[in-house]
Image 1: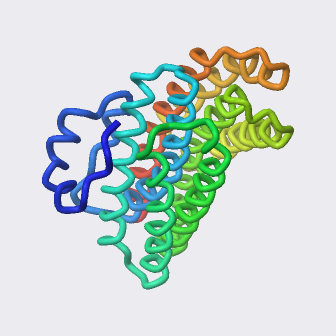
Image 2 (image 1 turned 60 degrees about the vertical axis):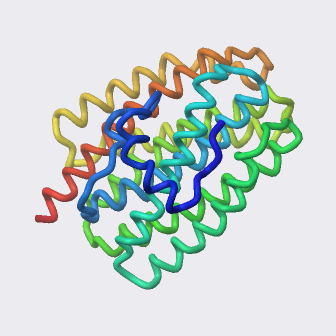
Length: 272
């Protein structure tokens, strides 16, 4: 697992990293050179997903589930989070957004100290809490940019982007339960995340701004979710299918990434 580079080293490696190692994440995760509001909401929202993805991958490594993929996911997610944070700080159009991005950076450094060390089961409870704190900080930035944008379509980019995060949160709690975090709270948060994902799909499906392509893509996510329900429902019973859940939530993430990109483009088109 690679350590997070110092800032100068990181940017010297940036082009090579993202030219050669966009492994296991959608190719649409590449950087845009000009930051529109739609792009900014998309990137800030993606930070929420990456926060959960890092924690999820760390837990997978403690349990030796899809180790090679988890190592790549953790390394890539941490690199991408750090790079996008710098891009968002350069974009920040208001002092409030800049201040909240500073708060994100502080929390990120705390989490990074854990994920750059050897994965250990006893670190999972602390890391889960830190991860959700980082998600909440990132979410505040999304809401700030959404308000700054001042358009109704910005909300759709936010909701769609949050679905990406929820796909990783579902996997995180599933693997946390497998790793021994079998408190009722773990199951409750898993079920709450699933309910929020379902509600988000419903909200997006009812959006009048949707194109035919977006509706078709959302229908595919619904089909994927329906297919996954039986596996999700086994968690409380302790019947684990970790490799199936790993691949299912990854598919949900990739589909929602594509949909969020479409909403970001729609937002920018409507705004202009």
